[in-house]
Amino acid sequence: MSAARRARSRTALLATTGAATAALVLSACTSGGTSGGGGDTNFVTGNNGIDTVAQGKRAAAPALSGETIDGKQLDTASYKGKVLVINVWGSWCPPCRAEAKNFQTVYEDVKDQGVEFVGINTRDTSTTPAKAFEKEFGVTYPSLYDPTGKQMLRFKKGTLNPQAIPSTLVIDREGRIAARALMPLGEDTLRSMIKPVLAEK
Image 1: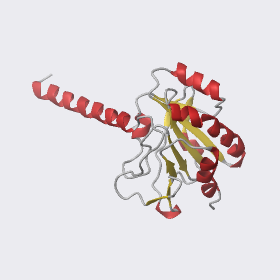
Image 2: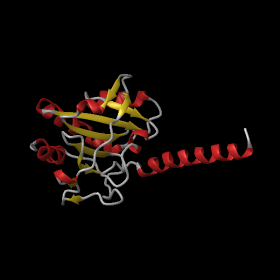
Image 3: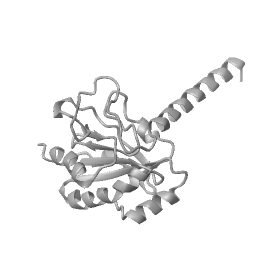
Image 4: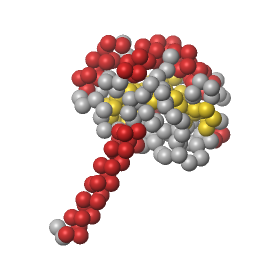
């Protein structure tokens, strides 16, 4: 390999590593978050800290796919036509632990109304602590295993992308990002994110 090709390879590797590192820095565990996605996101932040976007101004969410922490394959493209709640979490994150039972309770209440939940488990070095987390809090919906934050990087800058751990997104039936929270959620706040999107025709 020529010196020029080696230099190009090193540059590409550094760029990739830098992007992944930036994602992990952005995703530090937090009990609250600042709003923003860069660019013109068309969102409005409510007094409850939830960012929402009007139905006609929403950006498309990326399809997320891969292996779950249980070793199964999952592709969110199969959920189109349903409201999808995405929650980014880590077993090591105290605010994630605080909200986990709230998510399971709401999931059980709305799963028969055309609502799906998918977790993105990130920065756990193996699936063992993630599985223990789900068992401890009785979580029954699937979570993609995403130790390096690659799933989070699929969301385009300039959209309501996940920027913290925990982050929660509500995707409408057309596969567009309708709402985002960059903080742990109680049952009532989570329901308030889902209800208006579920009511849309």
